[in-house]
Structures are given as C-alpha cells and as structure tokens.
Amino acid sequence: MDDAFTACIYENANVCKEANGVAWQQLSKIDEHQ
Image (cartoon, rainbow, N blue to C red; front, top):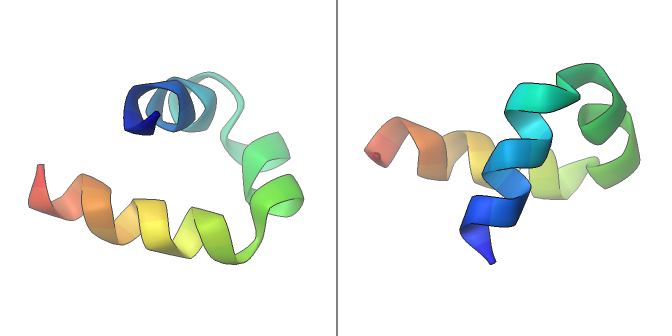
C-alpha cells in the first residue's frame, strides 16, 4: 500500500500532491522516517 503511494509520489509528484492533499503530507512524513 505504501509502496504504491511512494511510486506515485516519485513518478508524478505534482499530480499526486494536488490529488491526495492531506495524504501527501502524511506520506511526506513517512518518507522522512524511511
């Protein structure tokens, strides 16, 4: 589940940021821990 979102971020950062909104912020925090 996280991997799918991570791929989305790296491949389509701007699109995913606008589409996911809050989810983007949460995943950004997760990415920092990895």
